[in-house]
Amino acid sequence: MRLGAVHTALSVASLALVTASSPVYATDVGRIEALVDQARATGCVIPDANAALEGAGVIRPDARENILSALVDLDRADRVGPAVVLNSTACHDGAAPTLRDRFLAVMGQGGACAQSLDGLERQMAQYGLTPRDVEVLRDEMTRYGELVISDDGATLRVTDAFCDQAKSLAAHVVPDARTAFVSFMAANDCRIGTRDLPDAVIASGLEPAATDVVIEALVSDGDAIYYGFDQTLILLWERCT
View (cartoon, rainbow, N blue to C red):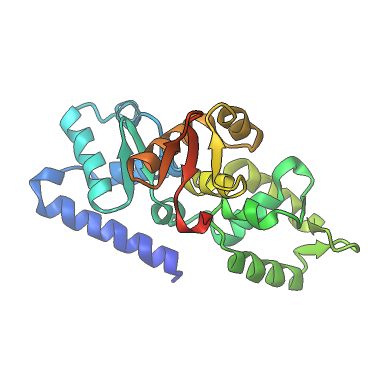
């Protein structure tokens, strides 16, 4: 069994134990997992979690609160106002997408099944792949004929047999909104003026509403600050020094 599958099974088992043993969480485990799956499908952010749960048939306010509190207490998500943001582990621990799926999703963007090697690791980081993950997958998929490198060494291409799969994954696999924003900030020297931020976010392909939620969470957690007369947003994490 894959490590991700083991972790997911343990998460579900832990959640079942909590809900069974405490009246505070006397709620449906299936509803909680459905909310996690819904968040994964929308960049791991749900801007209005209460509305999403009500739309899914959880009518009672206390039942909705139980679900949201369980997610936070099990360290699977953070709440920022009405929004829920899955943490990176919960975001990527579902049965799918696998690391290979996420790699192919990036390769399938734009429909050409090819990407420049320049900046590829930054693109992959938005989907939760480390440079080491990228290196291992690239070597393995090249060895098995799924990828080829152009003669000039500048472009990586998915072979024809796997191009349709890559394009399909590109349409369905989305990046972790928090990881994607951190990668975006790292590419901008970890600081950007608030006047330039909206256009830069859109130009980078990030989802504005999900990004707003992530920024609020980062500032609330002390991981980012607004500084100076022009209210420059600065990411304070060690990776940005």
